[in-house]
Length: 272
Image (cartoon, rainbow, N blue to C red; front, side):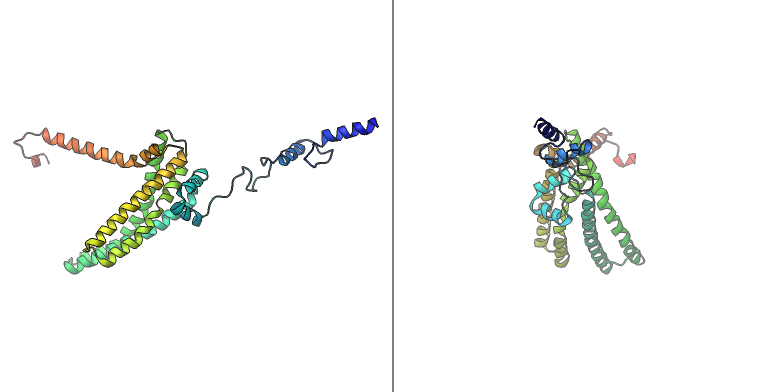
């Protein structure tokens, strides 16, 4: 009787309840089995997609839908796992659409000027420069995105942010999505002509609304990525524009001081 009791106690020690392991199953495998039986996932093999309990990131169409209709939860997902590749794809699509709209507008303006004025041999040369201008506009879209994201990330870190530049770049790229709504507005402007006051007013109001929308999306993105307050996030988003305004004011003040320091009887053009 005593031997049976001792065997049962030894079995309980070697096979804790809940693991379902045989009595002689011990060592690191036993600890892994105990953790798995307790609900832990830290011992699961790599590549299962559940090592850290995270779900796969959102797809491209899910991100597009989320930016339009669920910006807060979408930016939270972006902050948790920045989809930089999908942001690059979105920026590329927007650059292609913007470049196409610019090319159509530039070709139409050039054609109208050629019909009104006689440019002689300069006309074909200007037309040949249109593809070069289109490439420049396309590359400028990438440079603008990269430079603005860098300034945005720097401003957020100065204000006490805890996020990463990768997250800010992804959020900034996705925040530019509402700009796609300006493409039909530009086509409407081209069709109606720039002489229509109503069309110009509608185009200006649409551009202002999209700019405010993008500003709000960038603020939400910086807030979620850097864990800042809404006020500090808005200040970080506006900081590049505020810095530009401050620079222009300082430049204007310097020019005024320089002009005031010149003798009144000396013409200004003598200094050039």
